Image (cartoon, rainbow, N blue to C red; front, side, top):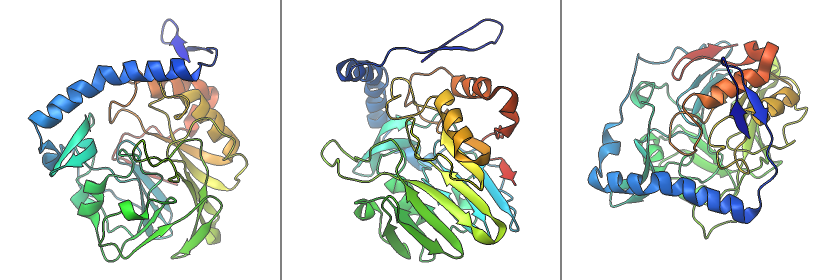
Length: 315
């Protein structure tokens, strides 16, 4: 996809599908533009991740009697639902990548943490969508270990979770569980779950959380390309979709237009866009994902939660 226009207008032009070879070549060129510098800076400043910049304004005010949500950067979302604090894909590190000898070699955080992690409420449940370094961040999880927190993760990823949590469970596609009155179901997005190039058998999940008493429902998609897996879920109050890292990764991450189409078909009232502006994973321009999403929504753009990272939305 490409965006053109004048006077702020957006016109989306569809390209013919790329062959696998062309897609791999384009991804390789994209990686060469960012990874050598990231490697150099990782080695030059090996422990920068211990001093993550924050723009903390204090603890987020999550409503206890209804549904509240706050985006914390990239794919990290905190949801309070029926009095339960659920944290999706926590990543609070300065860098994401391979940890070697106490330092992390990888891409830097562009957006400061909107909330100091120490000011977050006690977390009851952590959901991990898949094993990619920007979603399953072991340094963050080690700092969050608690005997009161349960972790739910995807197939064949349990051993990646640091010890110290109350319980670690794996959910596969179509399986569900009940936790403190909430029903959590795992769905299959259009993505993949490898931690490294050699472990392709790992799972990758999206999650639906429901609270039947008040008919509240939340869809947390994690990473996904265009798919009909979320069609007609019904009775959803909130859907969280990623809108970034699609250039040149559209085969694995939805474009803003595709994210809007999936949202429009999933039966949710409001859309919280995430997975943008935090780490330099894609080649899209600054602010492009949100501009394209708003243009795709057109007259229904009021259903998009435009609150900045760290701001609380409440139903």
